[in-house]
Length: 505
Image 1: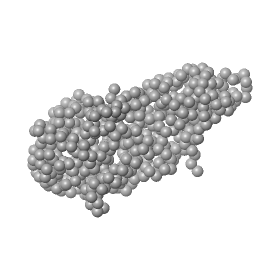
Image 2: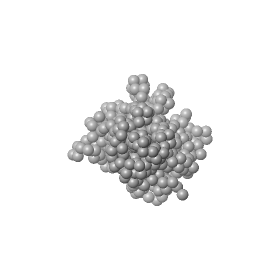
Image 3: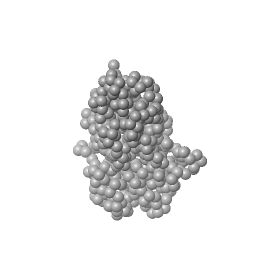
Image 4: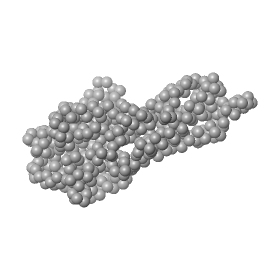
């Protein structure tokens, strides 16, 4: 079964920060979990390179917009492997194939009668590249996202007849209560539609950094309509996963299963985007999944506000798995949450190093010391088995609903249970009495099996550490089908393993 998941594409007017890393990580966790379950996954991310924010940032640095886009696109690309992101394709909206396909689709919207030329006037944020309606404007005539003064713009351009989709969007929301997740964001989008939809600008007359309008080359398409179409255009030229020679992935993957976005761009993805797809004669995606903001000092992390955590610095000091874990553990997915260097260090020391890392080290050491490096093939502990039975199905159920943080908490409860099991069974004491050899073997077999199960389920969250651990236990397969507690120990030879999460000096 196909599973097409996307991130929002990132503006290249500035370098990546932790907010960009967070969206990539959360999307990757879902993609990896679905691959574990045998789904045919296509994971798309990329950069948004046209429009006024990029043109203005380039002008401020004395650069051509394409030069700035090329430079910062490479920085976003470089972030992905350092986070162990498993995306299948990286789209750039300056790709000629994207531009051509955008023109084809928007020409179809025009041919279907959903465009007209008119005069637009409104309050505009150049960093959002968005006109704000009255209930979106902060006191002092400020942008609610960037907290900068809005500009009054007036120009003649082409309009998209968004108002024509009032009833189709109302029907969509009535028929698909899980179209937007979580529910609070569904209600927010539906309330926006209920206020009545006004037509929106489709083009810009004063800007040259963009895709030319096919029926009026004196204008370029408004960056949001260009950017939103990346989810469709990529399927026309991205290399196919696992099927060399396949030329067009549209039939295989569209409609998209999940668009992952931040709540600040909800209006575009939950109102403009489905209306545009309907206007072009295309199916709407199955889900739009909306995450909250990473906050510092209770404000959204933003380059323009200057309150950013540099993901490259965190990665250099602690590694990708630690950052991935922290992002999903510290902030409940779907909600806003504060992050800090102190909070990160505490999670690293107390949970990754002491709980998971120490459990791995102790278990391997005891198998080596007491059974010459071979996991006993003894029958595993029925009580522990009962506590781990059904865990994989529970985790899958939560991730089917995109409840990433509760799923991680469920797994981590078993990590802590295994640590308690070590203390309860005290293998070092069992080893002193030869009459308790069978009990020692059961204990070691059960510990190794429990650790294997939780590591398979943790794999989407911490792929590198879990792969190292599973290989050390001689059971490297992280497939979901292997995430079930077996009734006997593996009988596999183990090998030495450097600490998964070394203690910090």
